[in-house]
Each structure stands twice: as structure tokens, then as C-alpha cells.
Length: 387
Ligand SMILES: C[S@@+](CC[C@H](N)C(=O)[O-])C[C@H]1O[C@@H](n2cnc3c(N)ncnc32)[C@H](O)[C@@H]1O
Image 1 (cartoon, protein in one colour):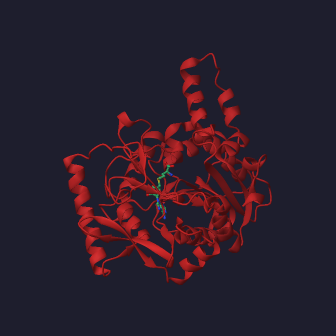
Image 2 (cartoon, protein in one colour):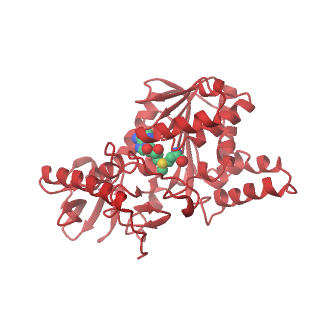
Image 3 (tube, helix red, strand yellow):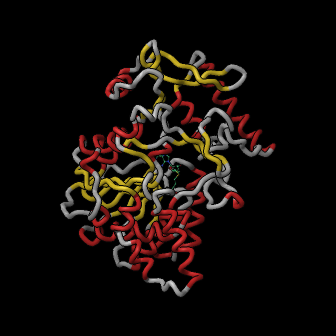
């Protein structure tokens, strides 16, 4: 196991405070909470959780601080390419753009600037963000990057709109939604939760909770198998589907189809923590100081959307989607002779497209409603049929 950097005294104190809060919840729940409650508190406990507290999370390099990097942080090229897809839709219909979990706000800034250039602006740019701290970071980024007439289009929401027309975008949001852990033991299916014994420890309980039990039984997990299920992500998807009157929902995240997710060889699940640019698999340490994520089961997402009346518009790798949406054409606008501008673009494209980096593991899934035109992002290599 990798040796992780030691947190500062200040960070340790912060972590202890959150630890006490979670310990208290465990005590009040007769000594055990399920992992989704633990993850919810570790990431989102007001003022203390990883996303709610004020630490820097996003950066490209370890030396710049932060814990991980997302595509909008790698390069403006990501947002500029996504904007080509959004522009196609806004040229067909008028509407708003709703971004879920906008991180530092860089993607919002890039989308608005590019959509303005393409003469395809949404009427409003809504952001739904659960972290008050990140809402503040987003405000600062957008104030610094956008001219006033674009800034005026941005509005933060505290809940999903009941009727939405336009484009919904979520980059790396589903992977941050708390998951349940199921363990197939000799005693039958158990839910893995967290107890306190001079520290947080894993503890299994026979799984009796009906919806989760039904989800786990569908996968016929072999003995010893440990994996995650995310009913909250399906519920979010269903709510988005009910809200959408006309337009598209585009989800970008790392994940696979259910067949790959619950493959017999993936018997330790997909849970991953990110701390100061180290990836590891122990969410019970450094509580509140590290990101906790699980991969997305895209088959489940597809069902959740289609069951609520959406059409599945496409599913493919991030690399395929970005190429279809015109990433290489955008790069070609900069001369390769102009090394100072071209070299960073080439390095970013390598990270976004390479199968060894984000290109293959990250997938894009889109749904449409009352929109019959095929989306440009899936013009080649659509893998919806494999879900
Ligand atoms: C890994 S970050 C990704 C941020 C950004 N989209 C990016 O690509 O850089 C996850 C984001 O989702 C937000 N989030 C988590 N659950 C959410 C929910 N249910 N609704 C809206 N935002 C959520 C987090 O607060 C955070 O901003």
C-alpha cells in the first residue's frame, strides 16, 4: 500500500471534528451506519465534509495542491468541445443550460464563452451545486472569466427546476454520489457499513432493506464478492428525467456497463479515494480530507432515464465523444508551428483522449426528450447497444 503524505496539524484537527460527528451518528444509530451515510457525511456534512469545507480539491499537479484533476481543469479544450454539442442543440431549440456539480466553475466559463462565439447561448445558465463552499469558488471563477453580459445569465439553484427545457450537463457528479456496499458472504448478502472501535471499522450486516436487496440479487454475485450500488444516482436520474420537458441530458463520468461493473473478476468493487494526488482504496482514513468516489453503472443510469420517458441518445467513450464533437478540428485552428499555444493543447488532448488516461475509462451518456435530431457527439462509435 502507498504511504500517503501526512496531513497538517490543522487538517488533522478538522478531520477529528468530522470524525466525532460521524462517531456520534454511529452511536445514535445503535453502533452501525451503512456506507452511503458514512460517505454522505464524509463528503457533504455541512462545514466539515470534504466538498462542504474550504480546502482546495482540484488541481493539475501535486505541487499546486489539491487532490485530483478533472477534465475541465486539464484544459479549456474540454469545455470548448462540449460547447459544440450544446450549440447543436441550442441551434435547434431555445432553452437553458443546467450544470450539476460545477466544481470550480471553469467548465461553465468555457461553455458560456464558446457558446457566445458560436451564437448559440442558452437563455440562462443554471448551476445546481450542493456545496456552499464550491458555490463561492464558482462565483469567483465566473466573475474573473466572464464579461458582464454573460455573467448575468448565470444563476445558482437550490433544487432541480420542476420543468426544464434545454441541456443538462453533469461532469464527474454521479461518481460523487454516496453508494451502498454489498458483500456476498457465506451467510448470504450483507450490507457493509461502518462501526466505531477506537477508529472507524468495516462491519457487515445481513441485507434486509428491500430495494437494495432486490438490486443486489439481480447481479447474482459470487461468494466473497464486494461491490457498490447507487440507488441515489438512479433517483437523481429519474428526477432529471421528470424535470426535462424538451432537450438533452449529458452525463460524463468514469464507469462501465453493468456487465463490466459486476464482472466476476471485479470482486473488490470500484471505490477509490483521492488524497493529494494519490489514489487509494481506504475511505475510513483521512475523513473529510480526501475525495471518495465509485464508478458509475451506466446500464442502471440508462434504465433510470428510459423508465421515466427519455430516449437514450448515445453512449460511448469520452475520447469518441470528444472526437465526434470536433476536438481535433478545434486543435487544428492553432498552428502546430505556434509551439507555445499548440504544445499545451496537444498535451491536454493526450490526457483527454488517450485510453491510458481519461479517454476510455470515462464515458459519455446522453438522453433526449422531444428532440429527434441525432446528437453530433455520437455520430460514430455509439455503444448504446452494449449496455
Ligand atoms: C468530482 S466534483 C466534479 C466537479 C466538476 N463537475 C468538474 O468536472 O470539475 C463533484 C461535484 O459534484 C457536486 N455534487 C455532488 N452531489 C451533487 C448533487 N446531488 N447535485 C449537484 N451537485 C452535486 C460536488 O459538490 C462537486 O462540485
